[in-house]
Length: 147
Figure 1 (cartoon, rainbow, N blue to C red):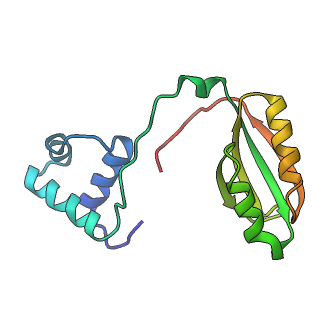
Figure 2 (cartoon, rainbow, N blue to C red; figure 1 turned 60 degrees about the vertical axis):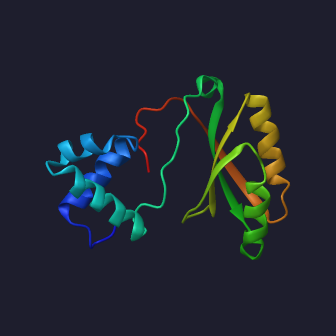
């Protein structure tokens, strides 16, 4: 987080992380300041690039029925860009992180079934530059916070 943020800015960001759709009047009340102050702070955070956008989170009843997994991927480093590009084209791949240690990439994936997950992992292993994968299923979410 930006070290130039004062406590009021930090509180404002914390409130927005929980619910980015809070009305300005409620934000101001929670912060203990005037509505105009909250509005100016919000505008300043946007202009300084601290807040780069607001997201929409949809209720997805089918999400509970999907299979979610983490797939760790070891790659040949000279193929890193091509591997990431190939993996990013897969609709089942939700997020890709670079990681340290034995594996180079961490992919968050979701599929309709374990059979589809197995096929996805086979396809991932078939990407030129992928040396090895290790996967684990996510069973249940105990905590989810907005970024």
